[in-house]
Length: 134
Image 1 (cartoon, rainbow, N blue to C red):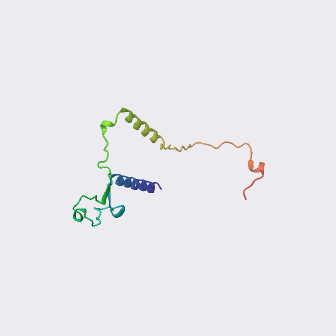
Image 2 (image 1 turned 180 degrees about the vertical axis):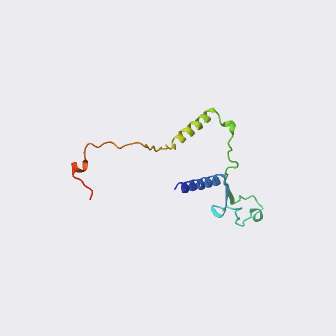
Image 3 (image 1 turned 90 degrees about the horizontal axis):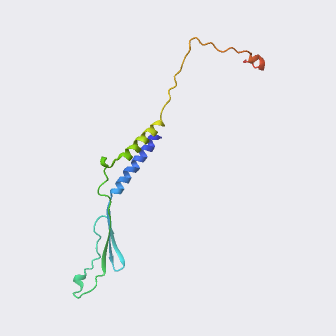
């Protein structure tokens, strides 16, 4: 049970690190108010309307491109021993000692006595309660 929990936790943490460093881009091409193409891997294909070739007069371009870029982490934070001050050292030491105290096993030592005689029983309980083993 413990091994499966450890494996699941380590797999979840690996996925968390992977997705926190992942970055991607979504590019959309609109022609007027209509969405013509969406691309997750490269450039979105245009609709084929080149406004420079169609009209030589100044005319507003009806096509537009939208680019959504989601940036992941470039660098993971590395641990620095210079940031490990006295308060953090005391906390780690106290946590470690209290954690170790949870798992202390008491070793029961069996003691055998050579010259130990059983105590004298003043009454015979089998006869007193009339309970006999048959």
